[in-house]
Length: 316
Image (cartoon, rainbow, N blue to C red; front, side):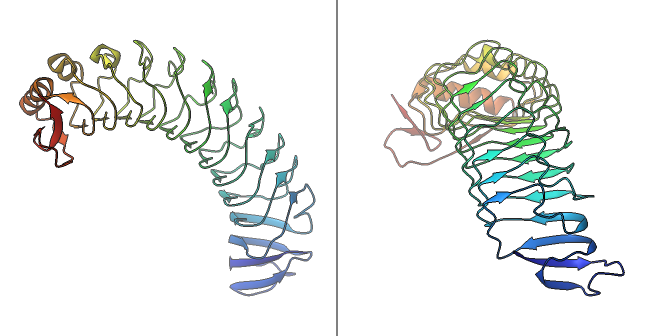
């Protein structure tokens, strides 16, 4: 037995006629906007967990419910679902065909390590969040069945991507891979992601960037490469990013860069963060000059070092 807190109910004849319902679920027919599970203890979300109720739900909230796994068809009875919130559980495994069709799925702060092909199963999900799990890789075609627009898989342990990891995620507009263990980006990974506007690769181990790794990102507006330990940065690696407006290169080990080349390649660049590197003052001064001439704003970070140019530290 588990208890649910239901908000904004539009009840049919055999259901409680109230705006709020707090109590055990019995055989009722409900149509409502929000359903909260406030005292659940559901180690396994099974196919018959919610089978007593013929439900039409807008938003299903199952946070902090001690769920460890989700069986196939566990949520198949639910109709009209727009958002499913499973954050802060203990989910280690999701079977294929577990979810019903919905727009938003939140799986943050669980114990997921392996994502199995088919786990989205034609959910047509548009916004998927998997941050703060233990995912180690993204297998080929893992997102088949979704219609992803935003994907947040930051703060995991991903060390391996495949060329077709995002084969069925070509409609992505925002992709967050920050705070993982990525050492390399396979060539061709972004080749078919022509709608992507925001890409966050910060706080990985991408010390070596390769020409062509950003191929296909013709609509990219923001690229975050902060905190990767980058030593050598060649502007030619960004040659295809004509619409890039914001570039984050802070918290790396960059000493010098061909400033004229960098600014000329990025025609739409409006803002750049180059702080917390190990700049040579001459190279940094040239970069700031070219940026000023092109009206590119350089974000400043004052570390109060003796040697700095416009509050960005450098060495003579």
